[in-house]
Length: 189
Image (cartoon, rainbow, N blue to C red; front, side, top):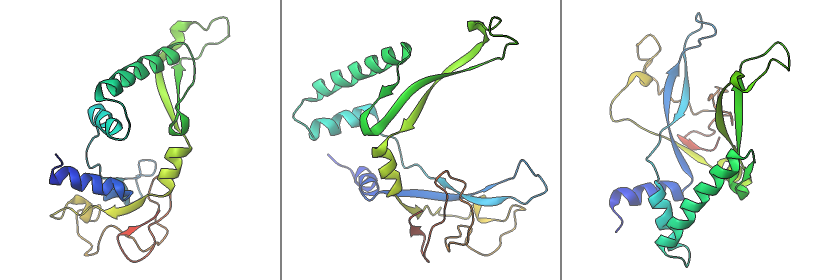
């Protein structure tokens, strides 16, 4: 049974729309410069593995138990493959690989496994995710009351909407960069 809340969330997802809020960020490299306002994604919730399993069951001919078994086996195979030093290609979703950070040694012969500080898993988006990102639309998340993000960095309100969406060249701080064009709070970056 679909609730109003889950229906609203699924509507947001089906529209390829990301909600953002505007936040003030200080320049820690040059403390003499005034803070600027940037976009920050407003997450709308989490999708659990159980939800993914339900969706896979609905969109295929396998049972939920089969999907659960496949997902558990996928996790085991990915972990085993990464542990063996392999790069795991997940189709158009992307790739997973292990990387390490380490302390430097003066010579190759002085470098040992003890120089390795930690390992991490890196994910690189594939064409499926990159295409999804390229087609996203953005809508401003409006808080019910004025917040710190609606004020100047000194705490005084400037009387204007802090989310400039007129395409004035303001850096959004994201890797995809760009501005929201047009005269509304909705648009494409």
